[in-house]
Every structure is written in C-alpha cells, then in structure tokens.
Amino acid sequence: MMDIKGKDSGKFIKENIGLYISDVKSVVDDGGKFFLRITGTSMLPFLKNGRDVAVLSKPSGLKKYETAFYVRSNGHVVLHRIVAEHGGFYDFCGDHQTEIEKNIPKENVIAVMREYEKDGKLYSCNKMSYKIKAVLWVKSRLVRKYSRKIKIKIKHLVKQQ
Image (cartoon, rainbow, N blue to C red; front, side, top):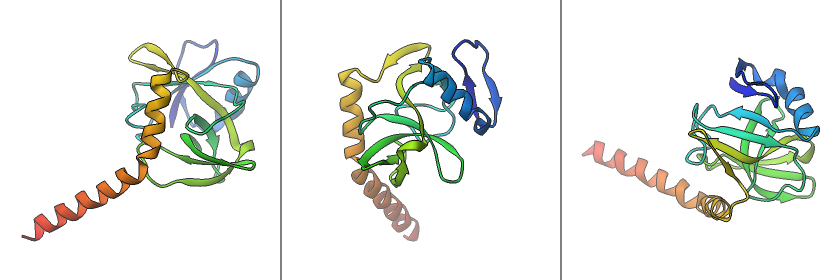
C-alpha cells in the first residue's frame, strides 16, 4: 500500500497502488508531476517511510543511479535505483538492499524521481551533492552486503560463548 497524490489533488489517497499505474502514467506523460508518499524501507537512508515524498516525472533519458518507479513482472510497483543499463533493460536495487533485480524491460518504467520532498522541503535529484551520494552509495553495495554478514557471524559467535 502507498499513499499517492496526483498533480492537482491536495488529498492523499490510500489504496492499492496497482490501481493507479495508469493515473501515474497519465499525469507524467502529460508533463505533470506525480507525488508519491514513500512506504517501506527499501530506499533508506535516502527516502524514509511515511515522511518523504517522491516527485515523479516522465521517464526520458534515464541514467544509471537515477531512481525510477517501475512495474515488476508480478505486477507490483517499486521505486528503486538504476544500478545498470544494458540494451533495452535496467538492473535495479533499493538503497537499503544489496540484491540486484536484473533485466527489467525499459517499457516497465513508469516514471522517474527527479525531485523529492523531505520534511516539507523540496530537493532536486540533479544537484551534484545528491548525485555524488547516490554514486557512492551504489558503489558501496558489496561492502554493505558483506559487513552485514560479518556482523551476523560475530553476533552468532558471541552468543555461543
């Protein structure tokens, strides 16, 4: 479940997001911005559940490290970061995740996050500071993955003693 707000709507609507795919597409395809309240933890630390809002736009000229709103093969919609592009496909990974979701067709991308709202203030994803953080975060994925595994092993060893 996600809260969503359309281009001209001041109200947030809580419904199954699958019902709104065509609405999101319609707003962004007409050059509008679609406001999507973040739910879940997959995009931490960049985007926080219930606090932040992704401002979605038409997905043109997508690049590695951008955050896109797309449909999975099972019909679920997700907002994750592009970590690779090859041919007509993208690989995605949530910022709080370490496993990559591979080979998502370009046609499955509904919108791209070009801005986000945090604590009521609007921020651009085109700022150099944001881009640098995104690149460094993606490049640290394997370090984060293995450091988690090491922490778990250490906890397990400590419990055995």
